[in-house]
Image (cartoon, rainbow, N blue to C red; front, side):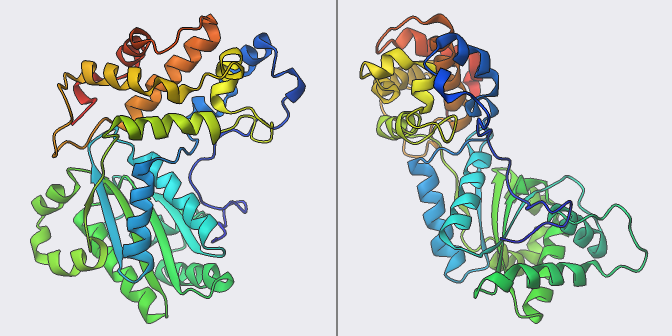
Length: 347
């Protein structure tokens, strides 16, 4: 993984709290768990939950980007879960391809109209200190050197860049990215971009005169634009809930303390699982969104962010109240009402 230069940091997505330093022997104590609840990884929303949606996206990335194309773009509605998925894709690439040259960038509204300014902003996003700008600095050359260094630990000459909030990039920035890609190619490296953007991104570019550059830029960065979707079926929702039961732990090194057990220890030890709530939760989602029957074929599903926030509310309420109710649709209705923008819940 490419090392950042700003204080030695590796530039990567935000990481969830690990719970290091907590007294594991006291986790059975309800009052102790309440006292440390504010530091729980679930409340940071930076934890990584694997879902059928993230699996689909990662498979597309592996197929389209790693096997040869220049890049792909995933566009979707607000709060559908794109940022969370960008974290998952980054982490899985780093895990599955040891030594991969990989960077994570959050696009900004203004990343430089001039090519040199754009390169400087990108280098800063990679973790380099760029505050003291030297008048004659060759920022493009510094990026090429950064990529060359990043690729030293890998036989692969591809430099992967995961970009969130890509709708903020203007047509000028895509032209600069195209030029940077060419410069890297001339130096023997290929730039592969994985873009996550709001749905308006492509139409936004068209309004800026994107038609003139459509063939070149689309062929490089939008080889196969993909629509990002949310949770579309009760089975997918159950799969997500199972992550809290069996795959997400806090503290990370505390044996057996999955998220569900942390918030509902007694019920969990009695055999209850959050995934058992899939039917009640799904029915409550349908009711809140005014969905009758199955979602339509052109629906992108329920937004991941709203679902996750409802889960947080439900589990927090469980911990604080200690009231055990099973398959309680009313509790899920309350959780959705308190956390979701119902108008944006499903699309």
